[in-house]
Length: 100
Image 1 (cartoon, rainbow, N blue to C red):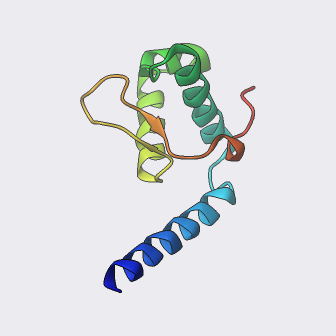
Image 2: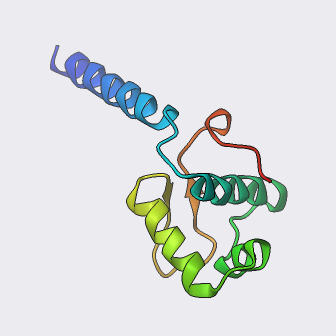
């Protein structure tokens, strides 16, 4: 019985988190970064380096790094600090904007 309750609680937590994410709580710029990470990973088979995002968005290295930290803090991505190309988008494709 206890195991069933734990599973039910996990399903509820997932449904709650999914509902929160589908409201698009990210800004337009954050959405573009998320879409870029998603498509880059899909095309190249590995996550982009911060320099790839810097070149695509024509911004400075600190700007990209701050965006990565912000996306991670908001729960949109996960990564392994200090390990290159370890970014993983935690949002489903249908909840991402089109890449402009």
